Picture 1 (cartoon, rainbow, N blue to C red):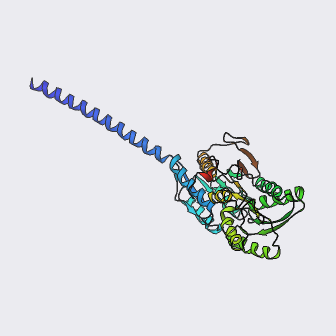
Picture 2: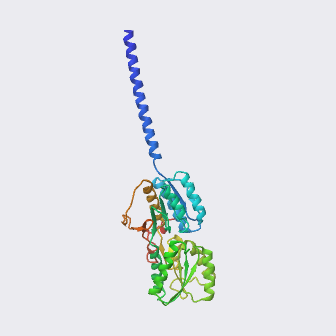
Picture 3: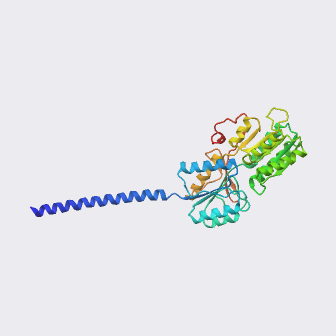
Length: 351
């Protein structure tokens, strides 16, 4: 009887131990699976291009928000501060810390080719935001049609001025595809549609102080200037308005002596200026969509997905480039008629 009890107890104990062992194994497997699930997300390197522009600061806000919302595994975000040398160094850090894709917005689109070659050799795909590198492979450029910016600005300003007058054009850097596209399209449109408008092309290097200084000199020579095209409201708006106010030239739209101004960016400050009649229009670069689709394509690239030219499901068109693909996102013209549209990102981001 005692022997039977001992055997029964031993068998029961063995069974309990077996169950515990199985449960422990299952728990370890679950824990392992959960850990690998988090660890399986590819690391994304993100470089912000600058912090001296309201537009790019808004883009940075959207990037940080979307990283959290979409559960993106981002490496520590860097900012190259409009310096290609810093961008190269930041990208090397991404390479060394396991980036499976890199998001950048090179401001000098000609000087980044060797870095793109290095990334391609290591099979690290690149998403270029807003700017299109002149050479070097890119997985996707997330951008709007910048030639359309120049054309839309020309059409609006030309009609505002009745087809005649004098216009100052604050050109972005001509070593940037964006500066070239906007400048070439604006010039071509003005020459073709509004030949009686005299355009003064003022290269600025995307610097507000340079634009302000050149505008001051131009006004001294041509006090009858009646139009301004700013290729980047994020850097040009405040110094321009400050100078015009100082000279007593900041007169509201509809009032005699008003200088008609059209801008590019779509930041909240431009919208406020439109409401006040200080400027007449801007073309809204989609900072929110730039951030959203930069991260979307970076994740897709790291996962090995591919895309083809054609219409997308987000109201844009992917086009083929010599060195990759470009998703051309919509960029609407904003005037007093639609400045309060809640669909515009500039009405949904903090001032």
